[in-house]
Image (cartoon, rainbow, N blue to C red):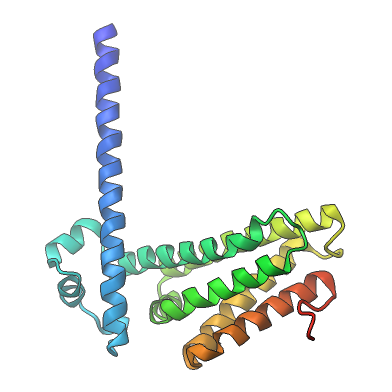
Length: 222
């Protein structure tokens, strides 16, 4: 019986390690396809027009390897969206995790970093948003990721309200509205304006969020 238990534990350990290696390889290939896809799109290719062969070739691999890690182009796009949205979440943490509950510098740092992510990945984000209009799985995944960002923002509002620094507001609704505002502004404005305008967009977003929560100006010069 003891030998049987050891065998089961060994098998379970081997299975976990195998799954972990597969996940690591998928992450690695997602990053490679991210770079390849964005390069092709910068060159003027629309994601919908890119074939699996074209994507695989740009990533320095084969069609067969592509299908080892991804079901289809939609699966790849969802993986790429997850990667980029994780960068946006990371960018927002300077505000979310600030020890100060009334931290203007942290908020501006967060909006600046978020705009930078949109600038770097504008073509891919546009492809994800376009695909979400006709691919239910892309839409569901994208909405889930945005909702995750909204929930983290709600927690900031909850903390501020508990401390008495943020005025009485319906935290969940306001967090959702602010999150989707940032998403829409970045998508609609960053991609059609030069990089020199990014600081203005970031400052404007920070000012709107700050004013909504605190009813005061974010910047002393305004």
